[in-house]
Image (cartoon, rainbow, N blue to C red; front, side, top):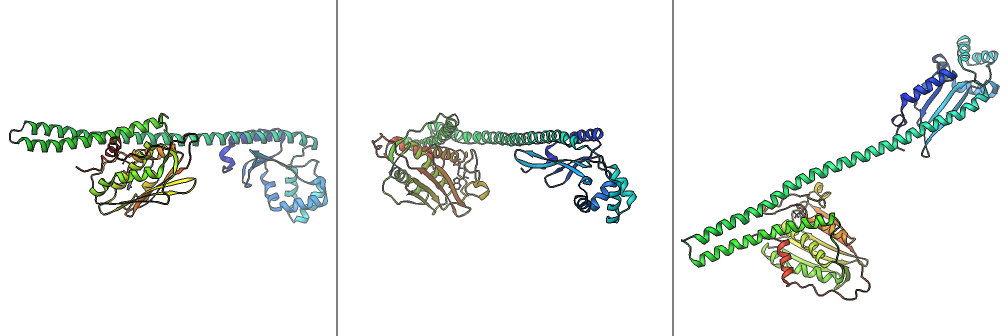
Length: 441
Ligand code: ADP
């Protein structure tokens, strides 16, 4: 059961009760735990304990062999809590008939112990009528039950208190995460707003400048407008993530499941980021063991998941590195992996990487922005598809995020979703938003 008896019963209270019982009956009592440690004893005579402890086997053997009437009696009541033997309550050392002095004199001689002292000890042992013992035994059983009940209640109390303690620690952790989040998110919001604000100020100056010709003004303004657009995307991404996480928490985000070709979708999303890959001087590979796979999924959410992982892979991989997207048909499961040869994620950070607002090491390039919402959102979206996500990563070697989605097909939904349209303006916008924090102007 994992608990020590003295930790789960009120020892002073039971000792007090057994002391009173001893006063009333003159029979000693003891409580031992399941390992035989005496926790409570009352009424055991010192002198008798000395003789008895030294000769316990002899006394019992002699008694049993020579004269049954002279056996010293014990009543042992097992204390059973929820099926476990947690201890024993004993009524110890009493006779059921008056001891025969002659018999014990012989016994003292055979044991070669001091006759006078032995008889004195024997005389101190109470005589308890066998009928009384029988009645008393059922009373002792009740006390045993009461101790067991006390133990069970205490265990429940301890477990409840441990649970509450754990929950309290969780709440404190959550509170801290929340505070850190607000500190972090304020920074994340302020940075693009500051950039936008500055770009507007500078644009105004450019507009009012008398030293610049029209062409110069236009080229400068166009640069600042791009900066404004880029940072607006960053704000949109952050706000989209916040809204979605909040919706997921409140169970408001639903899946729009359609039978579609998952291989085609992931391949198209991968190809759609070629420009970013080229601008960052990275290599991108798409691999699959199957040409098509029709399964039910929410195309927009899959897009969100893959773009998020790809944008991280790009963010945290230095120039010259490679990114691999693999789609493996495993029959009942589709395995999708996004692997990079980037900076990797420290082991101690990996445990909490999918926790909300967790942030790893910043990339060496220093331009990266991170609110720590992306991966928790990815995980939540994968789980909405009843899938799971895991991470293999080593510092300096790279990271691989592996998603497994169960293959399900919606019956009656024979319509295979339209082809993933790479060039649709909304797709381009989605990519711009997802990649807004890595795109250096
Ligand atoms: P954000 O939304 O700010 O990008 P994420 O939840 O996506 O945050 O990522 C959390 C942290 O995980 C990042 O700050 C980064 O340190 C780490 N991380 C995520 N993906 C990778 C990767 N491919 N390589 C290295 N670190 C990564």
